[in-house]
Amino acid sequence: MKHIFKIITLLVAISALWIGLLQMSLVPRSHTWLLPIYFIVSLGCYGLLMVGIGLMRFPTCPQEAALLQQDISEANEFLKQRGVDVGSD
Image (cartoon, rainbow, N blue to C red):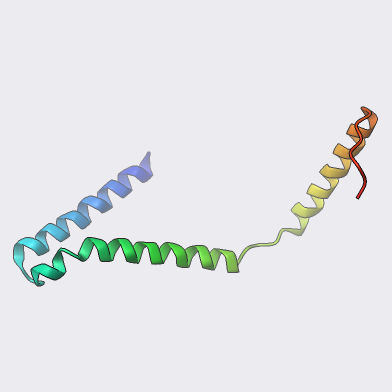
């Protein structure tokens, strides 16, 4: 629930800034109307960048891989005891 309040606060602050720019006419009106579109596009680019960085730094977990292989072998043994053909690779 805390995240939604942070998001709403951020959206209210950005909206207030945008409305303030529209009222004060510091930036030409044609550019001010495009600011939400620029914001959405830059937010999308930031999201893609974060996904790309996350994929480049994808962690390998050798301990977890070993535990998973152990769980798989235990499950195969359990199923063989129950008479299920699990196939052997």
